[in-house]
Image (cartoon, rainbow, N blue to C red; front, top):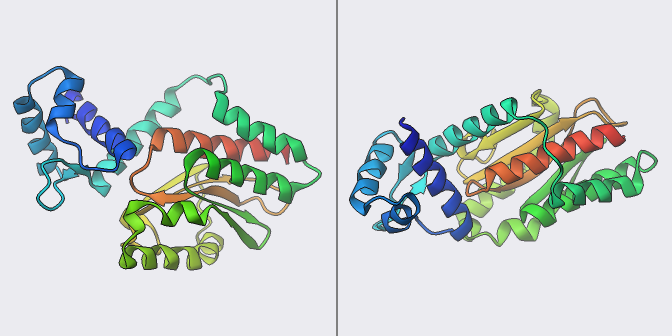
Length: 237
């Protein structure tokens, strides 16, 4: 992929996350200061690569799971090379709520961190507390346009029903794990993304906190917040 194709893919993903409708060439042409014909040509190449697709008869394009995966991998590489940055308002909000309870009330600290993620990402928040899976923000999840249809809602519900035993069995070992769409171990057809961070807690060396939402995510923001929530809990607890 050329640098411009990578930039156009990122723009489609970020625009689609914000507006929840397929992204057309006119918006992108203005953004990149080139002609619509140039953008359409680049979009055709991205479509041939399997990075974007045209839903139904819409003139716009949306990312595929493959496109999201390429984008997330790029973000992960960038993070590995970044210098630590100052905390922004969102990460400070998580820190403030977790510090309210400190290490004395581990369960309340974890729940507070989850509730912060729910508020900041508008996704469903999850965390393991001992042998239980704490969930918050289920209304956020099912209010997303992707999950209005019965089929997708059922697949998401199946994923939630099986998430706790899967976490115990699979015990994902990366500090931050991102499962996009069909990559999910359960509910492969749900069109959902699971973003979870592993952290050490008084309950387990493999405790998890994260969010579940549509594949249409602001991945940079959500990954950063989930990563910070896990690191913050491990530091405090």
